[in-house]
Image 1 (cartoon, rainbow, N blue to C red):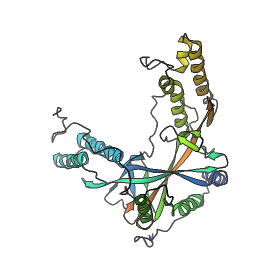
Image 2 (spheres, rainbow, N blue to C red):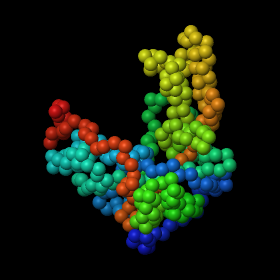
Image 3 (cartoon, rainbow, N blue to C red):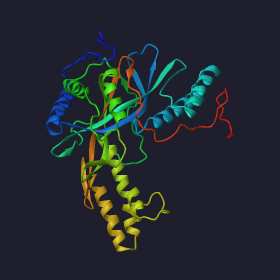
Image 4 (tube, rainbow, N blue to C red):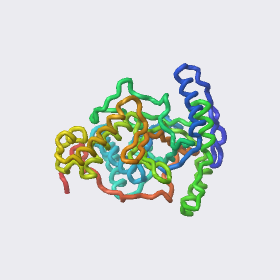
Length: 359
């Protein structure tokens, strides 16, 4: 395929395919309806993760650290751990292990956004998180978004991670609605006076250095309605059901402890459901029952909104885009804020992969 003009400021062609398989066609129709319901993008801010590119894979990259971190350093720390475990468990020989540990050492002291080690390129990548909004507020999950046939509310159940196994390919065909969204979001740029000058300058520069847009899979989070809109109260999840499970946990376990309804020393299995029967104070029992009742309402079908104590909580559908340039996905911008410094995360390893005792 001819990639077109992919010099700085140029764009790759978008290959569009019309869905013909019945399920995919329904998903596409659902996406068209969503534009009518909630077609205004509301940008939240950047997220960060790590992608790798192996020899012969270009222009494709594979996500190895999910693109969900709120600051670049969290993604670098994730790469630190990724390489450490590769050195410990997967290095083929001492030379490869030394190379991996040298990269780990750099990540412990430097803000490294890209490095090559053992024949693999790693890059901290930057995505923009946003959601659709309309007259009814921020977009909820769509009818065709993946849901389990039988909802599993077990908090310890193993579920696929966000971006697990995700390969990002700028040449992959997209559906008509995806193409329209990519084109519409190409010009996304911070322009408001509330953004510092360096943030706006970096955003304008990215339009030239990384002119294309690729869409990552949708994520789902819990938000609460405030006077100015909707504010997230949980991190992103791979499915709407996992977001509901996180709200169930908050309602029955976390928030009752935060509000003093369950003693800090209570066992891990004590929650709003079990604590109601053992509480001796009627006021406390009533509040715990309200939390438990709200959580129980989540289990009556695919419930995406509930109200408790005057606050409305909603499962919202969030989206992410990667800006893309001639050399692949965009990395952190100079104006992106780091909330922590590089640090040592793991114990040392010797050349045979044995963990060394603490210094």
